[in-house]
Amino acid sequence: HLHSNFSYDCEAPMAEMCAAAVERGIPEIGFTEHYDQHPGDSFRNWLRVPEWAASLEQCRAEFAGRLIIRAGIEIGEPHIYTKEAQSVLAQYPFDYVLGSLHWVGADFVFDDEFYKRPAEQAFGDFFGELAVMTLAGGFDVLSHFDLPARMSRQFYGDYDPLPFAEPIRAVLANCVAHGIALDINTAALRRNTPTLTPGEKVLRWYRELGGERITLGSDSHRPANLGANLKDAIAAARAAGFRYVTQYQQRGAHMVPLP
Image 1: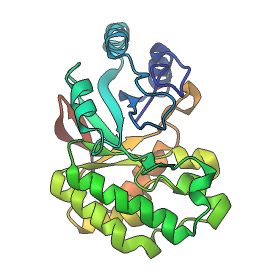
Image 2: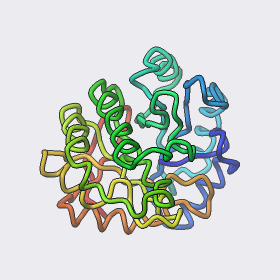
Image 3: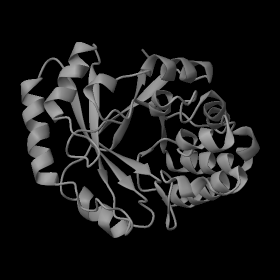
C-alpha cells in the first residue's frame, strides 16, 4: 500500500519513492494509486493510467536488480462502482487490487462530521458497509480494515475492536470466503493513534476463522514514511499466528515467509 504523485493526495514522484525503498533495504513495493468514483469526491478520475503505467515501467527499468515494483491500484467502494472498476482494471495488467471504504453512503470517513454520532453507530455503520463490500468481493486486498480508528481517538478515546466483534467477524468471514487478504496498515501510528489497522486482536480473529492472507503496508504518501513501522506490522502478524505474507503477481497470490 503505497502512493506517488499519480494519487491526488501525494506529491512525491514515483522514482523518489523507489529510491527510498532501496535506501531502506525493502526488496519489493507496489504502487496503489487512488481510484475514487464517489460523487462527493473532489478528485474523481484523477488517476491517468497510461501516464502512470509509463512511469511505472520507467522505474522498473531504472531500479532493475535493486527493487521489485508491482502494479497495484486502490479502488474506493468497488461494490458500488463495479462498472467503473472493471473499466480501469482493463486498462493495464495490474498485479493486485486494493478495495477501500472511504465513504459510507454520503458520509466521508475522514470528515469530522462522521464522528458526531455515538461510537457504536459510527463503527457499526462502517463495518456494516464493509460487510456488504467484502461480500461482493472482486478485489484482492482489503485496505486499512478499521479505518475510522485513524480519526476517532479525538472523539471517542482509544479504539478497542472488542465491542464491535460481531460485525467485524462478519467482515472477516467474507474475506476468508473470497480469499481477500488484510492490509496490515501502519498509517494510523503516524497520526498519534496507537493502533495498526487492523491490529493484533482483529488479526487473531481472522486467523481463527481460517484467514491466511496478509500484506504489509505503510500507506506512505511521502518518501520519508515509506516502510514506516513495518516491523510493528510484522510483530503483530507473528503474534497472531501468521508465518507468511502474501505477494501478488498478475492477480495471483503467493505465500512468502515473513521477514
